[in-house]
Amino acid sequence: MLSAERIMQRCDALARHSELEGGLTRVFLSPQARAATDQVLGWMREAGMQAKLDAIGNAAGRYEGERPGLPCLMLGSHLDTVRDAGRYDGMLGVVSAIECVGFLNSKKARLPFAIEVIGFGDEEGVRFGTTLLGSRAVAGTFDDKALAAVDSSGTRMEKALRDFGLDPKRIPDIARKKSAVLAYAELHIEQGPVLEAEGLAVGVVSAINGFSRLRATLRGAAGHAGTVPMNLRRDALAGAAECVLATERIAKGHAELVGTVGRIEARPGAINVIPGEVMLTVDVRAPQDPLRKHAVAAIRAEIEAICRRRNLQSEIELLQEFGVTGCAPWLMAQMDRAVASQGYKVRRLPSGAGHDGMALGAITDICMLFVRCKGGVSHSPLESITKEDAAAGATVLYDFIEHFKLSA
Ligand code: GLV
Ligand code: MN
Ligand code: MN
Image 1 (cartoon, helix red, strand yellow):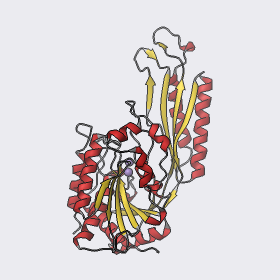
Image 2: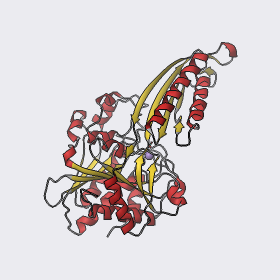
Image 3: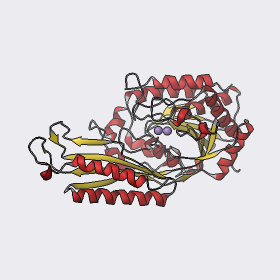
Image 4: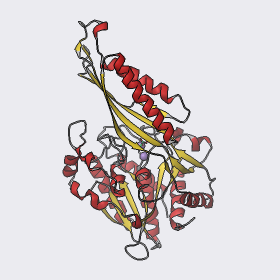
C-alpha cells in the first residue's frame, strides 16, 4: 500500500538534517546533506532499489524492469533547501517516488522499463550561486567552470566535493545517454496559490518558466560617515537601492514578468562607513523567453545608467540562464489520464518556480505533477501540505508509472 503517513514522516525526518537550529537549512555538500542523502539511500534500498551516492552528491536509486539494463523512466526532485526553508519543496517528490517504487516492489511487479529515482544534491543553488548542479550532471550539461565557484566562506566547489568524499573528475561518468532515459517525471508542491483557490489537490504542469540570474557589483568609494559631505560621496549602497527599485519597476511593467533582488552585500559593512562596494543579485523570470530577455536587457541598461549618474563603476555578470521548458504533450496526456482515473479534475498550469526538469530537458522529455500547498507558500518554514494531498499526489504518480507507455 502507498502510505501518505510514511511520506509525511519521511519529510519530517529529512527536515531534522539541518544546519539551522529550530528551522531547516540544508545546502549542497554540507554534513547535513550527507546525512539526509544517506537516509534517502537507505529508503531506496528498502524499496528494492540499488542505490548509491553519485559523483555530484545525488542519491541515485534504480529499480530494474522485466530484465536488467532496460532504459528507465526517471523520477526525482531535490534534497537541498533554501535558507530557513519548508520541508516539502524537493523532498516530497523524492520520498513520493520512493514510496511508489516500494509499492511496486511489495507486489513484486516489474515493468517493461526500469525506474530510476534521483534525489538531486543541488537544485536551489544556495551555496555556490549556480543552480541545478545535480540534474545538470545527470543530463551531461554540468559545466566544469562551476568547480571553481566559491561559497561565502571561500571554499571552492571542487574542494567541497572532495571533502564530501567525491572525485570531481568522475562527474562526466554520471551523464546519462539519451537512449537510457525514456522520460523524466517529477512530483513537486505547487509553490503557488492556484490549486488551493480552485479546490484541487493536484495539477499537471504545462511548462516551467525561464529564468535569468545576474550578479551586479557596484564600486564607489568608502569613507567616513561623519566627515564626507553628501555631495562628494560615491555611495555604492545608495546606488544599489536605486537598482533594486529599477528592477521592481521594470518587472511590474508586464503582468507575467517577475524580478527579484534577493541578496545584497555592502562592504565594508559598518555603521559609520560609507559603503564602497555592493554586490546584488537579480532574478528575472517569465513564461516567454523574449519577454524575459527584454527585461534583463532593460535592467542591465538601468543599472549602468544609475552607476554613470552616480560616478560608480559597475560590473554585471550573467550567472545562469534557462529558457522556458515545455512539458511534453505525450507525457502530459498520460499524467492527465492518471489524474482523471484517480477521480481528480484535470487542471493544467505553468510553473513559476524552477525545477530539475529544466536540466533533464536536455536529454529527455519531461512532465510534472503539482500537489497543492497551503496558501501557495514555499521557500518558507510556513510551507505546508495535508496528508490527504500527499496521498493524492503519490496515488496519481503511481498510476502514471504503472500505465506509462512510450506514446500518448
Ligand atoms: C527554485 O526553487 C527556484 O525556482 O528558484
Ligand atoms: Mn525551491
Ligand atoms: Mn523545488
